[in-house]
Image (cartoon, rainbow, N blue to C red):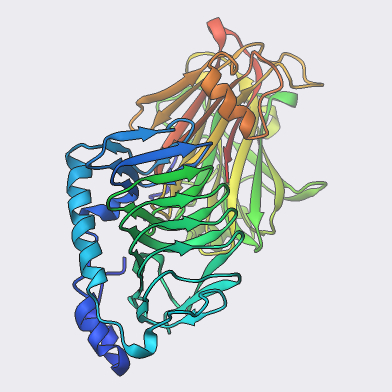
Length: 495
């Protein structure tokens, strides 16, 4: 595999608060507040943590001094682990208790007493706010405005309970950060069904999230339980990773057995990409594709083609990408592509054959679009001539969910399909992470595969659903018992 892309907080700056004279007291008090080790937890209960349904939690899930955590699975944890009354959870609970007391002790200016006022529809600027008793929220959106100060902090002290209505939402503007929003609740908090909440809830008693609630923040209960029901909870500070490079190595033949790579760009903006056809520079392999030819197609027509990359009218852009091919006979296409489906076809000049790699690189990570998947068809042989799909997650810190498929028997209109594909997933060090022969054989994996909506259509085909941290990975498709034939390897970045 010729993957050459290399994968990529704002600390609290008290001085930035000094520009706001009205917040001088708040700055002096709040800058010392910290969750310490509890920051690593998305969910932390005092007595129990209970989940119903397929909740997805990004961050640690723990309980202390209680020890009961139930509902994982079907709940899924990424970027973290379960900690039931272990040393990690015990320390986090101690730090939570300290932080809870500190936030409760912050002074709130008289003008910031919201007792009797509805949170729905309010826009709050940085500071400490206070409810003598329960916080009222009948409907509408709560907005936090950081006034372009990225470290601006918001604390809402609530004497008794916080209950948000169904389908309510929290919105952040002008640089507000979920890490710096705290609800210190004297009793219990309940988030209404289908609501979208942002912020860290520190409740003295219990926290309940009703079905369909999405939270960017933390659910931290000092004494009582945290109860989940088919929720998404994302600990703040994690940024989504994305596919930086997707590639496939295969023995390129002729006719229907050339290498055909489909890829999808999703989003709302055009994306700059480079597509490469590599052969002569591959080392330790034989025979390599001596003179690759590359075509780029849209949904219905040829967009452009290239034989030798230095002959391209976009030669300078290819050089500026920092990843031009290293052999003059190799091919490259630089293009700016709107969100859509595309196909790159790699073949040998004058009908030649050999091992080649077709690759797509994202050159515009900041654009509002992403590389979403690659689906490459080729002729799977044995030894070095199996099909190898490589991909890299980067430009973010969060783990991402993928489905990887190896398709053969369900391919129609193509002779000599691979009758029984097998699939292996390896990390960047070559370590085998997961493998699959027939996708229905593992009941738990089969359920996850079905839930994606794109399961293989033949029981002999293979698939893996998993969550991967940023880094390089390799998917290897081979034929069971040395079988050969035309197959497709696919990698989909799932929502």
